[in-house]
Image (cartoon, rainbow, N blue to C red; front, side, top):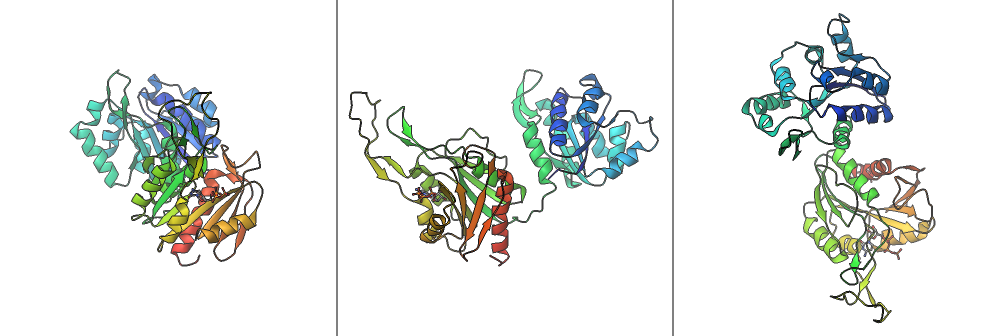
Length: 394
Ligand code: CTP
């Protein structure tokens, strides 16, 4: 996404400037070349030396150190990211005022631009600031945040800079083709849990990482996304409509409520196959019966398979070993278009790790093996199939 890209990071005078160091670090880690421009006010909060060390590039602060830096730096940039963007800088850039290196660069820059505002909530709701944000948006500038939260001044309100991972997500998204625009992708993720009594439940080890990666990747590619998730420690991606659930019956209900608007469904959830016949209202005692009677849960994707219409339906097959036959029989038995086979016996892939090794098996009998990849890359390989299907090339 940002790998190999030239990113111009503009830092302006806000307490949130300390987070820009992390932005620069993460961009470099992802393979981008980062050049940083600091305004005078930014240097009251943070030093050029920090950015120089992290970016391994010179840091630019002075308009008069090189007569053409304001042209050269902007010409080579693929993205101009201003984080934090203060009210003062936003207003100035909107008006075309060029009184420091950053604002001069802005006037010569013609590519992707992303701003992450940070300011007191009263400044953010000020009509002049609102007008200039609108003006810049109309010029094609993307705004990431601000969000509501506690502000440096001790007050609460909308003005807090978006968190670093979310800013990076917005930056990466700018470089991605929106080939899922118009699609409404329903993704399930995580485990479902089945209560035994008020404190105990039966469940499985799913972390939700694969499903959340699919939701993130689909958003980046321009889809509308609904993410229905069992309990997970992960933060739902910004922009997804998020429905948290616990039991299989709740996931089933949510899936069928959202089915109408969806054009593709990815069931990445590890749905509990069984649930206790009786759920005790009080905590079970050691002396109580040690037998747990279970009943089989509804197979959500199987019933989706009967009602899928023109939707593209993707399931997962978690197998102890690369069991193509079992995956293929799930594909056919549940009327899916594609099944993603996971060998969960491998320690380095599958549950609760960031990588996966998958085999995709489709209705036409095609089998495609993939090497070990990050889950976000696996997500794209899976989503490519929806794009192909929509283009009539399943
Ligand atoms: N699935 C579902 N509802 C269930 C069980 C599974 O929708 N009650 C879905 C999963 O989300 C996955 C697919 O069915 O997309 C296959 O799940 P998996 O656990 O591999 O297979 P099962 O059909 O449960 O069979 P088994 O556990 O015996 O391998």
